[in-house]
Length: 377
Image 1 (tube, rainbow, N blue to C red):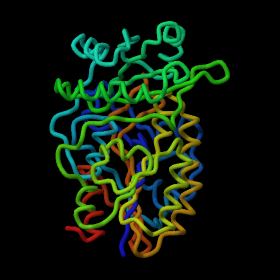
Image 2 (image 1 turned 90 degrees about the vertical axis):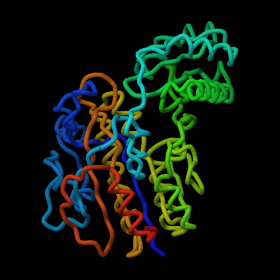
Image 3 (image 1 turned 45 degrees about the vertical axis):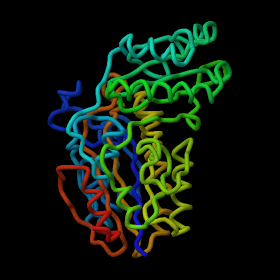
Image 4 (image 1 turned 180 degrees about the horizontal axis):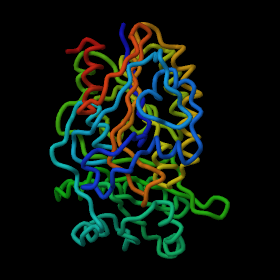
């Protein structure tokens, strides 16, 4: 039985798309190459063997004459630079119209949110770094018990609360109410995100394992639905389930860190139970890209590389592994938002010959090759 696994290293872009300036970026954005240069190079021997260093000049990553994977670059065809858009296109769905972004949410949204939740008021309603806004507004949040609402250059409605003040279940209920308000009003917001935090060592600290995303459902069937329609199974690891609103997901494993996601992926590959495993590794984006922490980002990539050897060792000739990303978040660039970038792609199977597949016009390449591999087209 043939199986496939897709691992998305969240935000690991590899160079600006030509239209990056239209998204507030510029052509200097290059998450992978820029962070490698700033941090004195990457130590990723397993990525190196696959051919990562053959894609572009990445400091510390050697080129190889005998790559074990097909390697190349994919451009995003959809309009946007957010998680949902990137993952949907990987799964075969190209968005013609981008999700809407806001510098602040209008009174029609906020007033209705306050009315329906009974929260009596909100704090924030500005574009902000999630770590900074909870530090800035925690004292007022503690005093008023009002939720902290913020957005970014991406299409997100984020709600942060100290879960020692506001129960986690209440936060989730408020997010569900926000999702319904935004959908009923056709406001075009991609995700409502629950951002729980606690005071740890005297500092407001986000609790990643309790984060939850409430996305709009895909408007058309995706790769996940097609796999299920062929009487095959799909395992979601990380936030994949949230991104696709559980559509096409047979079973889901939530994760609180890249380490958990990598271990779940390795275990699931060993079980040889699933036809498609779809994993998102979020730390590169959430913990390091948005916080402009190039050192942490480098260490996260090197951690993935350490697991990669074991992952490759459990694969047999029936297994196809694809490693890619969904957008950029260059930690050397200004601001704290995603960057409009191309992404690397590595395609591995024991019997495939390593080669350069060049620059591909869309992320849908992934969906196409998985469908062919699983023989559902």
